[in-house]
Amino acid sequence: ECTNSGPHYPPLRVGIDAFVGFAPLYIARDQLGVNVDPQLIMDTVERNSAFATGRLDALCTTVDSLVLLAITSRVDLVIVAAVDESLGADGIVAKPDIKNITDLRNRTVAFQEGMPSHFFILWLLKKNGMNKNDILPINMKADDAAQAFVAGRVDAAVTWEPYLSPAAASRGHILPTTKDYPGLLVDAIAVRRDVFDRRRRDIIALYNGWMKAIDLHSQQPAATERLMSGKIRLSVEEFRQNLATLRLTDRTRNEQLFRQDAQSSIWSVVSQAIPIWQSAGVIDSKADQDPHKYLSDLVVLQNRSK
Image 1 (tube, rainbow, N blue to C red):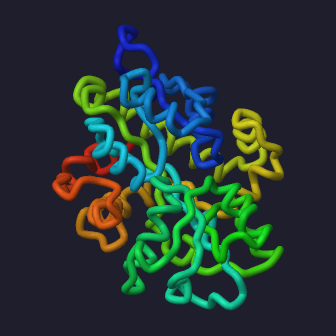
Image 2 (cartoon, rainbow, N blue to C red; image 1 turned 180 degrees about the vertical axis):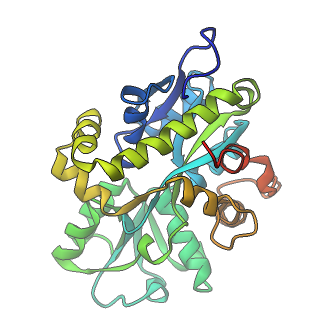
C-alpha cells in the first residue's frame, strides 16, 4: 500500500524540473495512488530556495548538487534514494585536436559553475592529476556552453543532451561522458531532516511507489511514456531519446548504490564530492566530510520485500 500515514498529513511536496528521470513520479501519483504533490519548478535557484525554506518537503537533483546545497545553504537534508543515473547524458565536447582530458590544459572550457557539469569536469581533472587551475574556465549554462563551442568561442564545453551530440557533430568530438563512469552523476531524492524524522512512513511509501512506477514503465513502456512525456512537456520521441542516455534506478540498482562498502556507491560519490568542491574553493574547507551527515540507507535497505 502506498498511502499510509493518515489523513492529517498533506501530500509530500517534491521539487523537480522537466527531466525524464523525474517523470515516474507522475505515474506514482496518478496510477499508483502515492500521496505526493510533484512541484515542477524549472529555475534551479528558485527550486533550491523553496526546499531550503520549507516550501518543499523533498528535492530531486544530483547527489553532488545536494551535498553542495546542504553545505553552502546550511540545509539539513537527508539523501534517501536514487531515481536515475546519467549514462551518456552528460559529457565534454571538444575541438578535434583535444584528444583527452590532459589536452585541456590551458584551454578554454565552458560549463555552469555549481552544477553537475562543474562537478564532472573537476572529478575528471582530479582523476587525470590536474585541478581547476590547469584549465581556463568560462561560466555558462549548458545550452550557452554548447552554442559557444559551436561558434568557436571556446575550446571545449561540458554540457548535456540534447545539446551535447549536435555540438560534437558540428565541429568536434565527444571526450568522456557519464557512460564511461556509471554511478557518478546520480539523481536522488533528498528530504529535509525534519520531514525525514516526522514522516518516515510517507517517505518509504514515496520510495516504494517510485520503484513500482519504474517497474511499470519496464512492463508497459508505450503507455507510461505517453503519460510521462505529457507531464514534462516533451514529445514521446524526445522523451525516448533523452531516456536512452540514462538509467532509471530500480530497487535492485538502489540497493547497489546504497551499499556503504561498494566502490561505485552514493556513499563514495559524497565522499569524493566534498573534497572536490573544497579544492575548487566552492565550499568551506571546514565542511563536515562524513557521508552519514547527508545520507541514509534506511529507506532502501529496509524495504526490500515491498
